[in-house]
Structures are given as structure tokens and as C-alpha cells.
Image 1 (cartoon, helix red, strand yellow):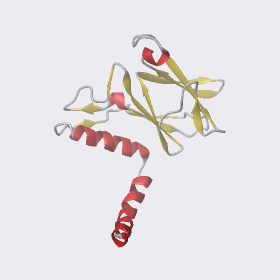
Image 2 (cartoon, rainbow, N blue to C red; image 1 turned 90 degrees about the vertical axis):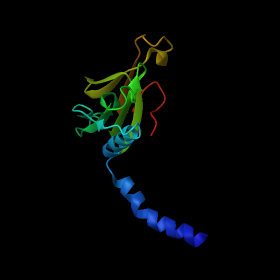
Image 3 (cartoon, rainbow, N blue to C red; image 1 turned 45 degrees about the horizontal axis):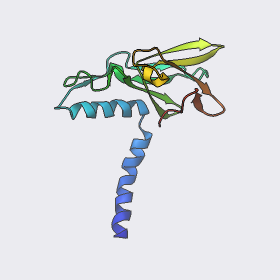
Image 4 (tube, rainbow, N blue to C red; image 1 turned 60 degrees about the vertical axis):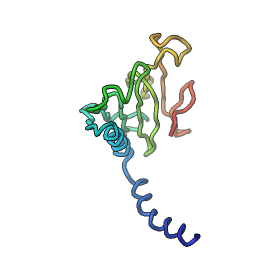
Length: 154
């Protein structure tokens, strides 16, 4: 039994290494494509503007934002979102950070990029249609986005 486990680990090693080396943006898009295909053989599209290149950390190097609200699946009109919003995946320092928002925008404030997320009003203690915004700013010290809300999932 132990030998079988060792053989499986050796065989799985290269496959696991390949997954770890793949670009997070490609992984996100491949996951969405697979999800769409599992919905009655749907055809997935990521139109222009789905992946944005933006400096989110203020270091002059662009990061990526993958906006699932722009995903298209031929067999589902609303698979990736609804009135509450859609997944927004940030790729920073090689890590994927997932948020949920209706809209997003990056502004400059005190020479630092600030990511604004327009959220469902329920996130701020109101009704769904009430305005609610979260502001995220990158901390070089913490290597994370700072906000008054809990951190994003990885």
C-alpha cells in the first residue's frame, strides 16, 4: 500500500508542478471555460475587457484583474453573476485574490492606486439597492490589500 502511494505521488508530481507554474489568469479562464462546458456543452467567451492590466500596488508593475461579469457562456445568461455582483479576481504577486462586486474602478489618491468596489447594499447593512463601496489600498509591509473589511479569499 505504501509503495502504491509513493508511485502515485511520483506520477502526480509533474502534473502538480505544472498546475503550480501555470499563470493564475489562465487558470481562472480555464476554470470558467470548464464550468461553461459542463452546462450542457456551453461555449465560453472572454471578450475584450475581461482581463484588465492595472498597477494596483503602486510599484509601476501591472497586475491583472479578471472580471467574471464579462464572461459569456452560450448556455447560461447569468452563470457568473446577478444582482449581487460577480467575482472579481485580482492577481497580485502571483497570488489570486477573489472579491465579489457589482462594479470596480481604480483611482489615484495621494499618489497611491485605490481599488473601489461597488457592492450590494447588503454588504453595508442596507438593502441590495443601497449604495455601498469598499476601498482597497495595497500595503507593501503586509503584502496585502488593506480595508476596513476582512481580507479576500485566496
